[in-house]
Length: 248
Image 1 (tube, rainbow, N blue to C red):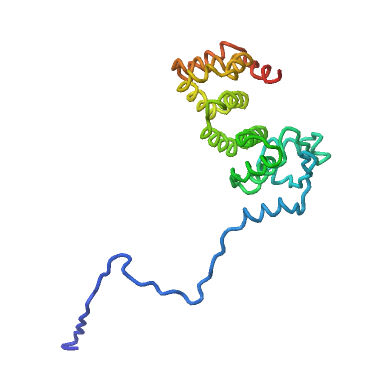
Image 2 (image 1 turned 90 degrees about the vertical axis):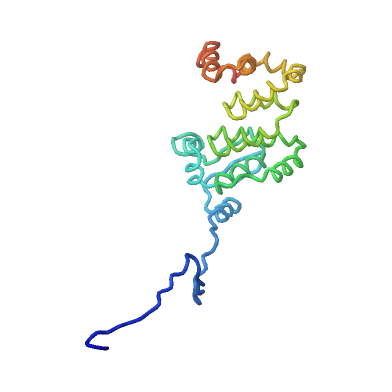
């Protein structure tokens, strides 16, 4: 201090961002990995506190109405608005095999997409059905119960497996389920392989049984826009025609 004045000298060092060493905390807490998906799957597998049963191919599967209703509006109506299932708490499944239905329930509980290889292996070992049919069955059940994310995933998987021998059956299913992604993929495949498709007995049978599908193929091959094609299809048949055809 001189003449009542304090003089301080210092050096200021500015270090670049991130140029420092972090010091580990001796008592840092470790946060466990999330377990919700695993826990809900265990709930399904063990059937704890279940209040609904599915009867599938002679096997009873225990489930929980709260989960079902929160994941599917169809289940919500079945279980809450005075339908038979809301009283008996037993839902009989007659249009789906037990392995595929379990994969469907697993998705409802965990939001995890099924292991395709495992699904195909399990179902094929039971009834000898071809691999593609398992994915088609899963598409059908996801459409029936209006589980959109699973349906779109099934469509995506089926689009990857298009072939000349399978395209007619897949197009028919896509048409009936109004699965637009799969339908457009099938139509594109047919347009690009038309010389082969026209020779198929399955194609002749398809357009004979489902005239609307034949119309869709013709319009798509001709390059008609989706809007114009929809107008043409509307002119071809009334609004209730699809339902009438589907019930034949």
